[in-house]
Length: 342
Image (tube, rainbow, N blue to C red; front, side, top):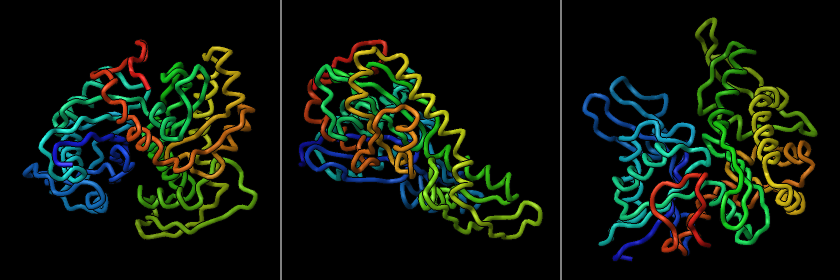
């Protein structure tokens, strides 16, 4: 459409997804920017920049401008968003209206930074939607009725636990325990146990390959290549699912505690609804083996992983574009009532 299109942006710590009305997700790119340190010139964004992580000469730096679900480098985030919006929309006469997802626990200052970055990237108007709310819509939950639903959204930088009812967030908690934290935990564990240092990319590959947060019926092991801290030479070590379970234990406990905390502060009627409806897990990192089993065993509530869990937030934003005219611009604060009507 030449006149202009509205888009939804799942602005994640590790990846950015863009969706449109009717088409769903049209673009998915890593949230990485590569720039020339000397000139400040933007060299690459997305996949091309990610391939440079840990492999750049002194004058080129590849960075993630998002950290823990919030903007850590405003200038780079703005330039990255501008490039992604341009690629997603090609040519249009009107600037688009944009809905951007944010973690539940974001501060008003951080919200304002997201809005400013969206406007600077070329938006006519910017609307914010909390990630668990978008994830629930994307997972197909009926959240417009006075019926309680719990969503656990485990993204790249944060884990959002929220209870939803009547198209709004009733109770929520956001902790900085996402995919990046799992990667870091694995790097530290292998360093501590084997005196071998591995890179972020290797850690992510191992996590995706044999990562688990609940005991598997059979133990599996893979060989991992890294640098020996004693000799400085390459070294190969075996890492098993039991090792990964131990490496991830502290993080999974924090997530379980956040779930318990939200349930404890939720009105009893909604807890009863959640017990009947079950808990829905979304976000790419909820796909770690056994996450639904872990939550179910610790809460005694049936827990399910949503279809296309890693796309739920982006798909929810795409569906939310249908009622963008009813949404309120500007920052949203959990203390205020939602004015959005679904």
